[in-house]
Length: 231
Image 1: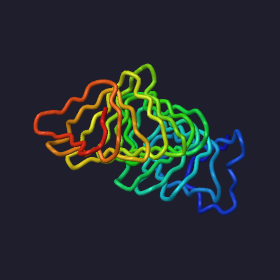
Image 2 (image 1 turned 120 degrees about the vertical axis):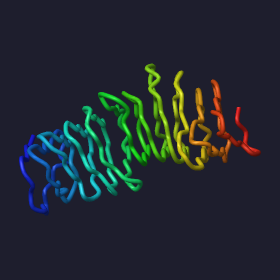
Image 3 (image 1 turned 180 degrees about the vertical axis):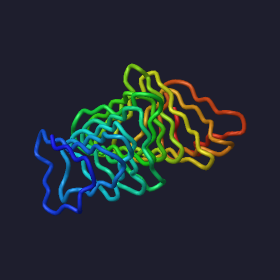
C-alpha cells in the first residue's frame, strides 16, 4: 500500500497495476493525477474530496471514504465498488464500466448510490444497496443481481440489454425521469416488478421484454409497448 498525503505532479511511468497493490490517497482536497497505466486497488481517504480529472482504470476494488469528483470521467472498475456514505459528484457524461469477468459487489453503506451512466460488460455484479442510475446498459454476458435483499433500482434515462442478464429476484425497477425513457436491446430483460413514476412522461418499450410480477403506472404517466412482446 502506498499512501499519498498531498497532490502529486503528473506522473509518467508509474505502474500501480500489480496484483495486491493499493494506492491510498489521503489528506485534504486535491486533484489526483492518474498513473500512465492502471491502479489495482484505489482507496480515497483523508479529510476532503478528491478529484479525478481524466479517465481511469481500477483493475480490482475502489473504496471511497471521502467525497470523489468524477465529473465527465469514464471509469472502469473490475472489482468491488464501496461507497462508505460519501458524495460522488458526477454529471451527465460520467460513465462507470464494470468490465471484467469477476464477481463483484457494488454498494453505498448508507442511502442510495447514484451512477449516471453504468455499463455492465462482464462478470456478475451483486447489488449491496439501492441504486439510482441514469442510463444502464448490459452486454458481453454480464449479470446484474439485486440479490435476495431485493435492492431497488431506479433509472432516469434508458435501459438497454445487449446480451446480459438481469436477475430481479422479488425486487422493483422504477422509471423515474421527467422525460421520455426507453427500454430496449437485442436481449429481453426479465423484470420482476416495474413502477413508472417519471413526472408525467412516457416509457417506451422498443423490443421484446418479460415481466414476472406487477406493472404499476402512476397517474399521468404512460407505458407504451407498441407491437413488441411484453409478457
